[in-house]
Image 1 (tube, rainbow, N blue to C red):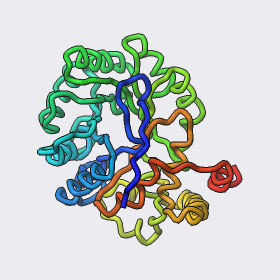
Image 2: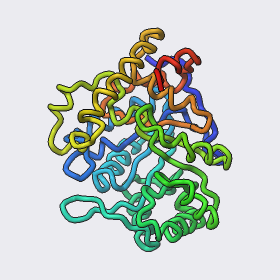
Image 3: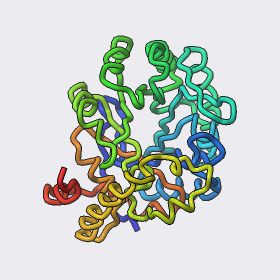
Length: 319
């Protein structure tokens, strides 16, 4: 059980003092939509949220797109009755299209409607961090970010940021308002952010929270070929190249290296994978997806875990 307090850090120039890991609510959006993770029991999701909060995690990252409102509604249920609520971060710009597939909109009216719907589902007065989910369509990013700035002026959101933007897109929207936060994908498997985006965020003092630090479950140490083969049809990972050959064998080799380091500290590969992302000086926090209370305890240590240079060398192997 968690007995030590989780380390916190200031998220960029915001007044948000966040734990180094946050609760990721993508998978609890359930199945039946384009990027769903298969069936998920809402009561199990709520138990996972409550357990993570009891262990000291102080922020939740969700999105209107996750189950097209379902994840936000579950988070809202979990928040009800809490004496002290965590920070709540959510995202806009992905709407439900035909066949429960994602369509993109960065139009002002659409974003303002999305924010109102998110506030209602979450049951809160203001969103602590509101983010554009994807910079699509590219030509509308200024309109979308202007809408976020407008929501902040109205007091409906406290801070504004973006997810999945590149440096050129960040520079464009910086002309409208300061970009307070950035949410890129970053893991031992997805390292593109290291080239430009993380150094830029560091220079500009943009708060960074990374998503999929365990590469959507691949780096947990519990992912096997058998488990992938048994995934439900509506789990998007079944069709992701990282979970298929030839990439799968390379990715499982990374897990073997994580396991070597994990055994040095009597922890699990997933904790080491998360800690590796947090070792980057540009990264303030990592979003960790939990689908049950049992998944929380083995990974919570990542918030306080510090890797030595020798550990990092072992993990990264021959690059």
